[in-house]
Length: 144
Image 1 (cartoon, rainbow, N blue to C red):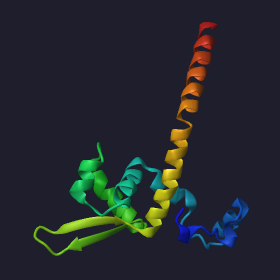
Image 2 (image 1 turned 90 degrees about the vertical axis):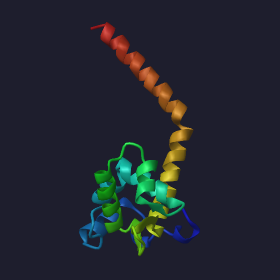
Image 3 (image 1 turned 135 degrees about the horizontal axis):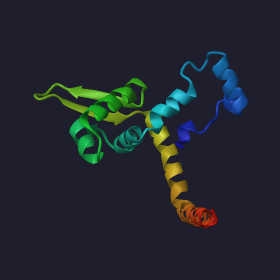
Image 4 (image 1 turned 180 degrees about the vertical axis):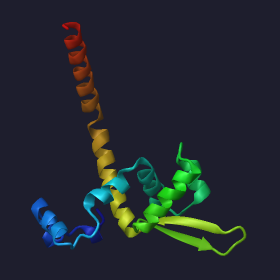
């Protein structure tokens, strides 16, 4: 995490505290709803693409393989609505629009890097576990 966001708020030191905060109404958007939004593959790719520099719509469309224009538009709107992207329109002809990750999105980006690094670190362990599982399942199928 960045140096400015290292302190954990007192009320969020345990899961029970987080549940109490949610139940008290101090957390108006349920965490599951936020996680659903940011866990989508398009949202992750957009946050990653905008984390280092502002990006134009067509740039994002080229960078994010497989995303349709409609899905890109919807995802950008949702991320902007949730405060993860800032949209800037420049008064040119044709209009130039850029999307930039907000401070909140940059904090999320850092968490994504942690998860990505974890997946790289444990990649060979996961591959070995999958191989053992598949071998076990194949052996069980032979006995049926």
